[in-house]
Amino acid sequence: MKITMTLLAASALALSAGASLADGHERIEIDGVELILAAPAPDYVEHLDKVMSGWLFRSAETQALELDDFDNPAFVFIDKGIDLFNEVDGSEGKSCASCHEDVAEFAGLRASMPRVVDGKVQTMEDIVNDMRVNYMGAEPWKWSGGEMTSVVGLISLQSRGMPVDVKIDGDAAPFWERGKELYYTRVGQLDMACANCHEDNFGKMIRADRLSQGQINGFPTYRLKNAKLNSIHGRFKGCMKNIRAKPFKEGSEEFRALELYLASRGAGLSVESPSVRN
Amino acid sequence: MKHTSVMLASFLLAGAASAAEVAPQEVAFQDGSVLQSLTGVAGDAENGRKVFLNRKKGNCLACHANSDMEDQPFHGEIGPSLDHVADRMDEAHLRGMLVNSKMTFDGTIMPAFYRADGFVRPLDKFKGKTILSAQEVEDVVAYLLTLKE
Image 1 (cartoon, rainbow over the protein chains, first blue to last red):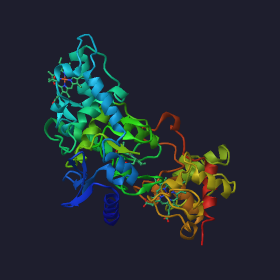
Image 2 (cartoon, rainbow over the protein chains, first blue to last red):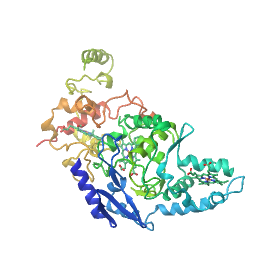
Image 3 (cartoon, helix red, strand yellow):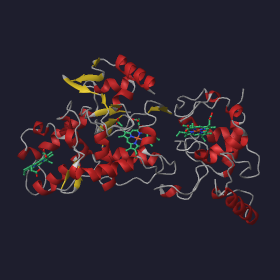
Image 4 (cartoon, chains in turn blue, green):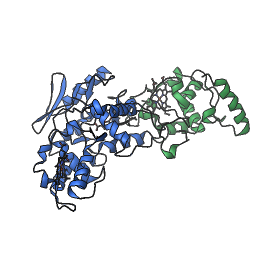
């Protein structure tokens, strides 16, 4: 396994422009910002030596799309996010920008999300809808709808390059434990756990797809497959359906816990939003 | 494994009552092998090859390479190559691998293709169903038996 991974990372790096190897961490640069795409695994990730971004497992062509924001198709949606941020909506006659002059004020937020607030796992989608409903008097957006993923993408982009660092102790601990349990529970007619693919077999081909560690540091993710930004919970749903399991609902307690746990498995990786995947 | 004799007995009863097909919960294992055909009808290797390839059925190529299918792009790397597998495993063991490979490889990622219950949160449309029918299992076994040196 070790040999495969070293080779893989090396070939990924060799194939992509702008990438260099330093301190044993795979790093790339996008728009002048350095991103760390592999880091020593935190102690609580017992079965991995290294945590690795999904970017390292994609083809050279797909990788290249992410290295320049002009080539990155996700930026069409980021632009839409900027428009939505400035658009007045709801009974209060306000836009996001009425209260938040510069979206850059949210730098660092993505890196610490999700977080536990008032005994519940709060996600970026929750914050956006809280703002819309309680501050603007507007309708909430659908979890994985185009408006939501665009604005979540825009806010997440402000943290690009910052290390993922979510809180998992204190009141977050029970949610983290629940997420871990879900990660290792076999589900569906194919009877597989997330770990069977993303921990035991990352780096290997499953038919035409090279398995990654299933990290979420790059979400929302532009997928070539559906040509749009994809939410974290939307991706979880897709993986569950593929193993013929009844997915949990987007925004469910289960997916919130799983999101917290997966974010913690990416500790030390840079926020890479909006990433490009196949 | 403890329940082998019980399972075998209930199989005999059910078998006598219904058609010749062995129901998923009645399959009798012996050290990972299933000695008796699930249907009593000889497997059709040609159809077995199709089931092997079909993404909604065996989808075996997702995880296994197979030189006999070199025309197909993208062979998986999760499991071992199935080249010459019939030289390594006999018919009964191949059948056992297909019915439930966990009887040979505890904790394997390979799905059990002829098991209908005991799943957590299966999608409604697959509830109580096996991935392959009894005859499809026999057909794939017949196909695998053609993979030898």
